[in-house]
Every structure is written in C-alpha cells, then in structure tokens.
Image (cartoon, rainbow, N blue to C red; front, side):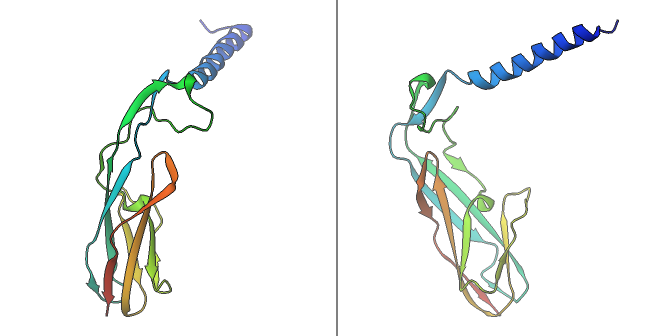
Length: 156
C-alpha cells in the first residue's frame, strides 16, 4: 500500500527532523589537548639522483606525542578545538597532506591530484640540485607548523 500525499509529507518531515536533530546533537563527550602536542615528521624520497623528467615519489610519516583529556562538549568555548577521538599516534603515509616546496622552485612540478597511496610525486624539468622542504600543521594548533628534514635531489 502506498502512502497518501499527506502521509508522504509526514514521513518526509519526520526524516528531515531526525537528520537535523542528529546534526545538532553531536557527541556529548569529546577530547581536547591536555598538553602541547609534539609532532614529528619523517620524510623520504624514492630516489635522490635522477634524470630530468623522472618522477620521484615522496613519502611522509607523522607521529604525535601528547595527552588528550575527555570533557563534556557543552563546557567548551565556541572557538575551542575538540575531536571525537584523539588523533592516532602514527599516521603511516601523509605526504599528500603536507606542504612541499622546492628550492630553487622553478623546475619542480608537484602532483596535487588524489593518490590512493597518499604519496606525492615531483618531477623536475631542468638539471640541478634541489632541496625539498615539507611542512605540516598540528591538530588543534593551526598556528603551529612542524618541518620534515630537507631532502636533496640531484637531477642530471
């Protein structure tokens, strides 16, 4: 049996109300930083001596150290950062989530498209020695940046 027009409207209204209330309620308990998070980046390249036009795959691992405490979300200030769960202590591959720069910059072309393995690739159009630098933000501390060790690439 199909619902009547009024019945269909009632069902739609109930569904909309359920979705809105679930979006507004959110978790009652959340996590906030209990100490200043320490973040370390470990970066690597698939090769450091290449020919012009070769793609180099960049890898990065991000590790977090720091304590998180669980609090009632309603007691937080409007601008306070919180998470449903603390971040993982180790993120295995985050190269596509870092900011990469080359010095000198003119010849380096970084891919910015989605890669399923979360690596980043760079191709150099001219011979030379290039230094790649990586930067990451820190959970709940957007003003804080951490840097990976520079990677030197020689392009022949």
